[in-house]
Length: 285
Image (cartoon, rainbow, N blue to C red; front, side, top):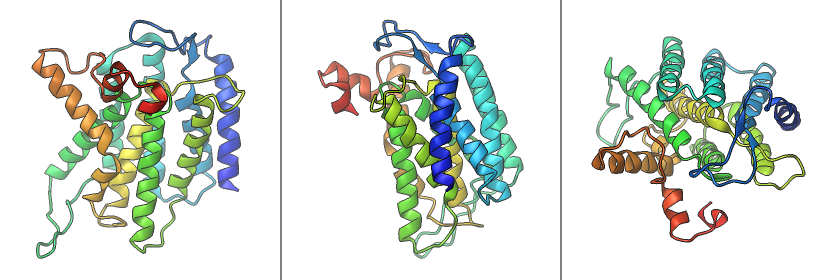
């Protein structure tokens, strides 16, 4: 029932916000770095967020998960303003920091990095909060950075969520993962529209959408590896998101070597490299 509702809501919101996108300047216009045809509404992320937000009040979510969903709204609002008026990377980082601190204030953070055979759980103490903020902001921007071709960003987030579901399932734990399942369903609906499978007008996630997905994914990984929940070992969180992490590190290193601002957009991402080698966008995906 919840999953069907989430699917329908995502469809409705995409159509509704696509209609409003010109009035709020939420359109992605082609340029030398963006090679798509025509102006595309940047409303995919907004639609996914509102769908998961409404559904989350119907699902029996605990306080921590609800705080994560609500805090993502901070990133969404400032991200939408950035999509419309190009406010810059500083605004994005500030929104991520504020939203991250709100969740940390609710009692969720990286406490330890797990136990390893003969070693007890390695406690991080106060450093855990710093590692939490750095990790969340890092993965949020990694997901945002890799949003370069149709289906790539949302597809990688979907893979990460499915991987997390599998890890939880094979660990033998029986816990409510409705929020992960619902978010996955919303992303699938977006992918169908984004890839042109449906007759509905094509939409993009936008920076707001990719950051919201990265933020929620980051906290899902932290929450389900937290000692009070501990559905998966903390080290497994990295195996859910290897490509975005390697891409982020690779891009930053290459830009720093060339003495370029690491946050300045260019075509040094893994998908750009593969496209320049002659692969089609579908093969890259």
